[in-house]
Amino acid sequence: MKKTMLFGQMVYRFRSARLAWLLFGSAAVVSGIAYSQLSGPTDSKSSTTKSLGSIDLTKEIEDISGRHLRARTVTIEAGGHGAVHSHKGRPTLEYVLQGNVVEIRNGVEIAHGPGDLVVATGGVNHWWENRSNSPVVLMPIDVFKE
Picture 1 (tube, rainbow, N blue to C red):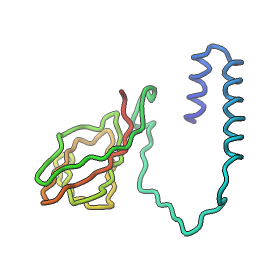
Picture 2: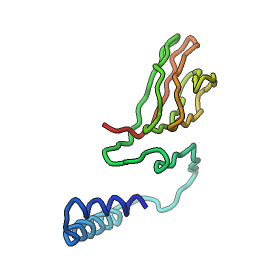
Picture 3: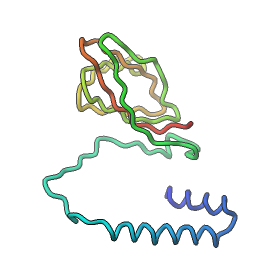
Picture 4: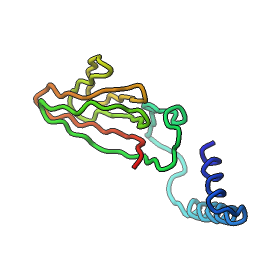
């Protein structure tokens, strides 16, 4: 569904269906050539994939144009904390890489440790507190607008 919308926007921007089809066809040919040039195993061995969480962006963001997907690391030193913030229009998946941290979410304290994934969407107001003696490292992956 998103690809159709993006393609529809491309047709609108170029104001020429022929040019849009030409660009679309060229991209398809180039991606087919690039795919055919891949060399390596065609199956997976000794590998597993586990979904940790996802967010339906259509429920979170009205206008997706100008948005970016980013991944960062945030380090909170011992005794430190982050500022309170909202995730309205900026949904995020926050993975705890290292340490034990307390999330204060909408007034409720929730303890998190390494390997935990925290989903924060529009209704979430929260901040993080490191009450331990060692650094905490979070990896937020979010959609934001510049």
